[in-house]
Image (cartoon, rainbow, N blue to C red; front, side):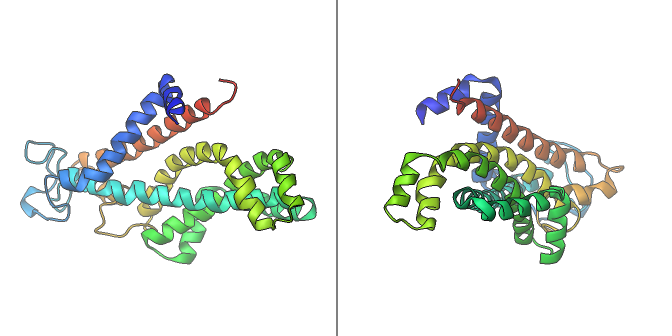
Length: 274
């Protein structure tokens, strides 16, 4: 693990991505403590304020402190995006590994179903599921996780096909182990590396997708300090205070860039050729 971390930091994208992600993690952990104001406290006389000593990033249409809402919103946005990615990765990894283990017609049927679902863009698929489930943060997490599962299944299967031919899998079959045991205990742990890399890259997309669902009213609901919801509320007042829409947009972009860079760094660090 130490050697992996060293190789990760040797690459520029890995070092920069690690730094950004660690900063985001720190904001998630200490953000509510470090917030200078109550994120829901309204101050009608301080509406549309620009950055100042009292309000470092300005205020919104209700006079609420933008910095405090961003710090609280890190949990609402990044943590939910991480949970959605974890859900999609686990479900997709199990489906892909199971498909590779079964082989034959079962593998063909599972993969053709996955291909049919993957033909629908992830955003449209997530919007469809979110509309069916309802309007809440948890429903958005479920929608994103389900939308991510087919892609993770396809990636996992491509690696699991190689693992399926290994001697330890044949030995487990010869011992009479059940299919569930072989998939979960023998094959799945040996395909974890590409899953981690892909999941890291998908966290960036999940952040933007979760913010998009909240922007469209299908994710977090007011008065939650979620970044996508902050952008949605600020667009009507950007002619009065452009700061309202600028800061949450920068936060979303920065987190997405950080996880993308971290994923690229992990891919290089886990590459056997390097």
